[in-house]
Image (cartoon, rainbow over all chains, first blue to last red; front, top):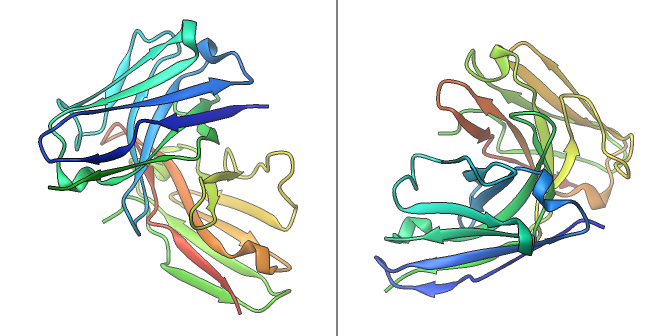
Length: 120
Length: 111
């Protein structure tokens, strides 16, 4: 069955960096675009970033552009989110999600999320 | 301010029918982009409930139905059950912002 498992979250000071990972299994990972979506405590869902199935193209939300970068290693069935220059407003649970259907598609499977807290 | 507008909360007694609206604009739902719905029980990941406006994934009860017309969409839950409590989000794509957009979410409470 499809499984997405995020890791790498934690408490980090403002201005520092953190790298999240998402381990995928149960499907041909290299065939699917993958996304990051976050949810601040008590708030709604916010789309963060997408990467194409082969990693050749990626796109970020304006709120994280220039600070976050998404990448993938299809040989390891893994998705990553490199987060630099973190701000308190980046505090959230970060979910990886598989996109299904042609662009823009929808998110048919989600990981359980990993919590990032940006605080001094 | 979310690009897609949902009511903050709806409630109903067990067995009743509730509906959740999702209102967009000419750059998302009104531009013909599909709407999708997710259910999230607090503390867990969102789960796909409805895709491509009206379709239920395997395992989703037919108590859940949805529709879309122009820049608006709605989700209906009939025969409300206690297990339906949670937050419900609509989602689409906005061609003006070039991003995936979510509604702010609607909390469903079973009285």
